[in-house]
Amino acid sequence: AVEDSCAKALAAALAVAGPSHVSFRDNTKYVDQFLASKAGVCLVRPEMVGRQPAGMALLVTSEPYLGYARVARMFYPAEQKPAGISDSAHVAPSAQLGAGVTIAPGAIIGENVELGDNVTVGANTVIGNGCVIGADSAIDANVTLSHCLIGARVVIYAGVRIGQDGFGFARSPKGAVKVPQLGRVVIEDDVEIGANTTIDRGAGPDTFIGAGTKIDNLVQIGHNVRIGRHCVVVAQVGISGSTEIGNGVAIGGQAGFAGHLQVGDGAEVAAKSGVFRDVPAGTRIGGFPAKAFRQWFKEQACLERLTKKSR
Image 1 (cartoon, one colour):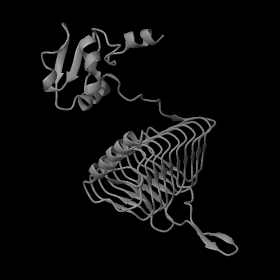
Image 2: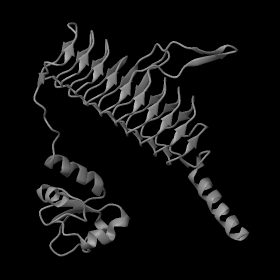
Image 3: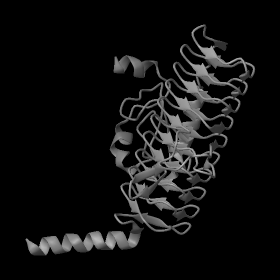
Image 4: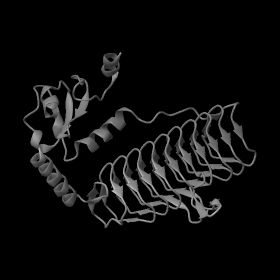
C-alpha cells in the first residue's frame, strides 16, 4: 500500500522516490540515500552538483528544504472543502458568517461570533461567545475556542484549546484562592497551532501570539505569555505565565520556561532545556539549567572525561 501511494505521488523522500518524483537532499546524514536515489529531480545545495546519480536532474539552491516546501505546495495545494453549514451544526442567531464559510456536523458557534470569509470549522468544534476568526482560517475537528481574537489564514489542528482560564491562584493559610482570569488570547495572521496544544487566556493583559509563528503539537502556553513574530515552538514545550518571547525565536522540543522571563529576538533554545533566566537576543542556549551553548558543551565534555577517569 505504501508503494502504491508513493507511485501516485509527485514528491517523495529520497529512499522511495522514482524517476517521476521530485525530492530534496539537505541533511548531511542522507548523502548515501542521495547517491543511491532514483528520484527524477532533486533539490540540492551547490556542493552536491556533479555527485548526483545518472539520470537525476538537479535544482540547485542554498536552501533545499525551503525550495522543496514551495515545490511540494504547488503539487499539493490545500484541500478546498465545499462551503456550507451542516444541518447538525448549531449556529447562534447573532453570529456573523462571511461568504464561503464551512461548518461541519456537530459544531457549535456561540453568540456574537464573527467568522470571516472562507473560514472552515471542523466537526464538533465549539467556538464560544464573542470570538472573532479572520478570513481563510481553518479550524479542525474537536477544537475549543473562547475569549479569543484570531487573525487571517490561521490554521488550528484537532484538539486545540484556546482561551481557557490560566493557572492563577493566590495562596492563603486556608488554601489556594482562584484569581479571576479577565484577558483574552490574541493570535495574529498566518499562525499555525498543532494538535492538542493549549493557550490560556490572559489574567488581565492578553496572551499574544505574533504573526507567522508556528506552534507544534502538545505545547502549553500560560496566561499573559507574549510570543513574537515568526517564532518556531516545537512539541511539548511549556511556557509559564507572563514570559515574553521576541521575534524569530526557535524553541526545541520539551524545553520549559519559568514565568516572567524575557527572551530576546533570534534566540535559540535547545530541546529539553530548562530556562530560568532571561535570554539575551541572538543567544543560543541549552541544558538544565539552560546556559550558553559553548559553556554547556564544555561542561558535558568535562563530565565525560571525569567519568572515563573514574573507570
